[in-house]
Length: 491
Ligand code: BLA
Image (tube, rainbow, N blue to C red; front, side, top):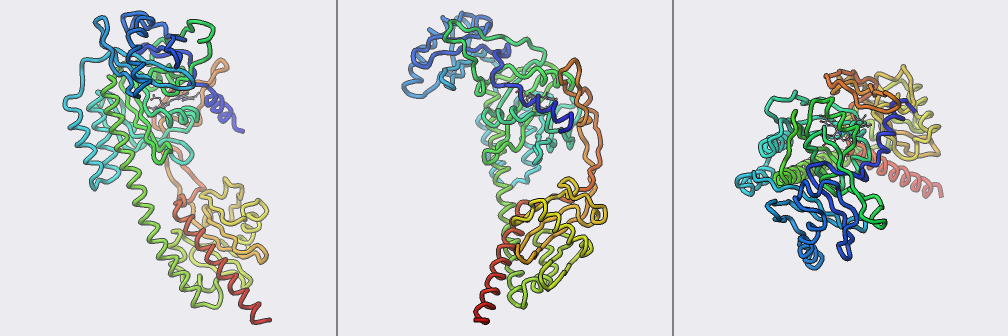
């Protein structure tokens, strides 16, 4: 394990869902779900609500009873000259009430704006335009200095794919950020609770107090809005020159696709209604992203199905499967968008396009067998990282999809892709994890930092790996049928 990995592992272990405190812009009451008895309160209830926790609980109790009976949760509480926004939910055997002072400012005609946006998303809009439109509208409604659309890659690094703002903060468009900036437990939490707001990164956390022994157990704040956030992340925000933030999860099929992350250089609070509107915008955007990716996958699927049929026809015309494939070289390469393909069978070695020498290919398939990569199909865009570090094939064979056709005869079909040297620009040197006085700190510089990525091919699309898988299944069937025919002829 690399030293960085150990550090980042310790980040991912911080139990951020049970901080024992809230941010000062809201107050929290933890109640018993049966009789709404107060179990724990944050120390700032009187500051926020203008009345003590018992008074608030008493005033709220008819609404809580109605909520229990009919499911309609309280949202507003007007008491003693304060109007409060109320959020109630039940989790982990407790009722959790959150109070924030209601803001006077609201969005004018919010429904009309949201409807117009949802219509735009439902229309024939390109993904890039949808991302930018969402960022622009969110900046406009929330008054943050900047909104970024941040997309995760398969390794959970982030890439800023769209941006809108007023120019007060630097542009991060197209920059990448390492996976450790948003550790695994934070990503898990953001899947469950899509929105978080940090109005002032310099805040002092407000602790929770238990009112009696029974109330002592730590409160799971997974679904709260005013949860106190990780101190490491607050330091990160200060280092980045952003004293306030709001981020909203983009979920596609239940998976975290990315976030819309908003920032201001100064403290900035966003009223509940505006947060709700921004959340709606992001959920509409998510539907558009999901639809566009399904449409793309479907289109690729149709094209790959056509190529598969052509290869089947070519194999049917030939005496042997390997000959059939070699007779349709362009189709064979197009199926996985590879630059070369090699076939190993009892009849020897055949190749199309750019392929390493026969000896090298045999060494590769040998290595695949010995390392347990030969069960059915194996794909990688970086053979060197997988452990096959061989300079003689490095140029033509950075990425492979390898299919073992039959174990007994050592028959293989392998596609190859060459190295593609890419330059990626990170927001600060991702290898720099700062460790001071035994604790890990976020990096201090977010200056663009360029890195050249070597020994990698263009990544294989899921649909291409699927197509290779399907072709392998067809070949196996053909080989079996041929073997049966031969056995019948011999009998
Ligand atoms: C949380 N880190 C976050 C969040 C973002 C980022 C958006 C969600 C909270 C929020 O909305 O502010 C990261 N912010 C970014 C990135 C950009 C940005 C990438 O503006 C780019 C434009 N962070 C570190 C290290 C650790 C770490 C080294 O850099 C671990 C020791 C931790 N980040 C960390 C934790 C959280 C976090 C624990 C969760 C905060 C919480 O919700 O409590």
